[in-house]
Image (cartoon, rainbow, N blue to C red; front, side):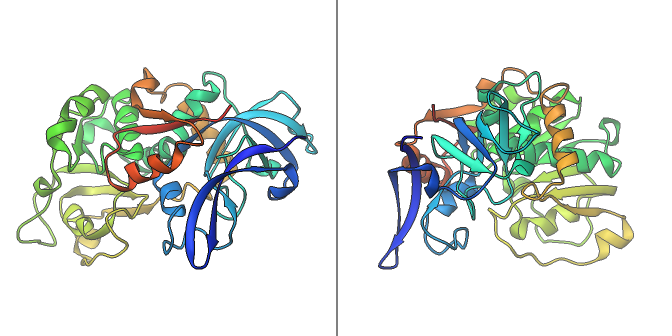
Length: 331
């Protein structure tokens, strides 16, 4: 196989930098399936991985990209054959294993999911880890007893990838949706078009002063933000409601009391999309290709970029200026 282009993060003299390099198949991490990558996408984690001091990348150099979709070129596994359309998200991809920002990828077969009917390779990466995490969050909330008649669902970080997809999925399932965004003034039309019923600024969900228990407002919360806002949410979740927590853009720490948990029976559910079990992973992708698939997926694209344009996309997402998804066209 001839050399191909990959976006690599590397370190020299304590400086971390990204560059587009020409590499060979032997420069990739080990795996029994080789994939010609057609699409990837940009996640907050990808942008963090390009920076020093974030702890995302521990071994340099590394091909970035935690998502990919493409066509199998060769396989040592009986589960996949050349020509199969597949996708890979999560695991160690783009973190400790060569990732999807590359014209070719080599991965373990147990990470690979066959592209479900009802999705194209492009649509799979419009969804990507962000949409998959949103689906996993909604799945867990419904498993915990949430259903539309119990009341509104709050979606934090509504203009981001996870938040946007959560709104679109919840709309398909007939929930009443309250969306939270710091960009309320400029994103109302976008969020309403996705299906949000009410648009809130974060200040409108905070309590002043903070109390352990307050008026019950939401039957469930999709939260990819985390941080100090969480205790304000705990106090306002309805009895036996739940919050699905999948991110830490708002910080990794919060201070709370046990009262909402023992007096209202609320639940805090951790969402780990990286290590999601394969059977559930396949089930969620089937849902995302059918009844949970948002209509007109392309409206969720904020921008489409090439491998060369990725560094500027990283800066945009880290600055909080992205609305929706950044699709990466690799092939």
